[in-house]
Length: 344
Image 1 (cartoon, helix red, strand yellow):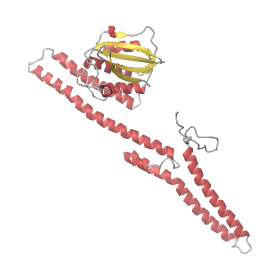
Image 2: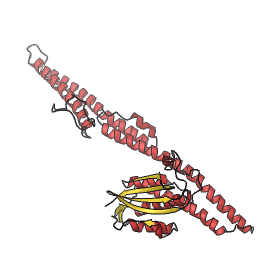
Image 3: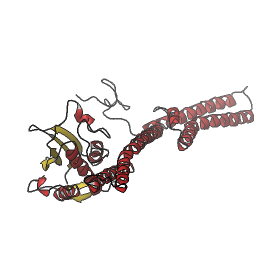
């Protein structure tokens, strides 16, 4: 049985009508915190007022004007203390926000906890700082890997050019140069697709899945007869640039690691449409299916025609569209890598 997210068994809600079945509203901590402090100050002021009135009415009590002066002083002190206590979390948030603006993401550790008045704002700022830190770390790792990956095709292209100048040409120097150019182009395309996701620049449109598959085969210089699709195929809503990049990665993976694409199959699975690239390679070894979705993973097979982000990018593209991506070995040999997106 799924546990309640509020009070545990036997505990009752704030109004005594049974256990909580959901978390309090987002502004609950803010309202409760400020309400508690204001009620405390008002009760204290009321008590002082009642006590002062009782003293003023007593026959042998102090003069009224002295009580009034003392009341004004006490009220001023209480107002100052109450204002400081209520404004303290705001000042703390402002100080930490300035530190975050200056790039000190570690300052988020000083944010007030969830029980404070501005707990919801603190959680939002903490989550924002954690997301920024994760993105910065991913970008640093990505730039380091990309700078390393670009060196290889550039170095090979430079060697081919030097050999051509000296007259020591390979049997097909232009084909070799084209392969290196395709590798760099694939890496740049993967980077642009990843940046499109990072900066939330996804622009979905209603697409014909069959036409998308045909365009992907044409761009990969593969035979259109590799496409297998049912007669009736529902439309999908996706970013055309990202979906085309995902299929290009799947086809390049099948050509490189899989020793040639056998089929690009479209299948309707409930409310999802799946593009699956089947190859004739050795398939995945034990534990390699999840490793294949790590950035820049190549496995032990031959080098694929691109140096891109591989299946990791395909999974990100699927996730940003509310879909999935996966891989598996085929019973008849080879591997099957796929991306599935919601229809409609």
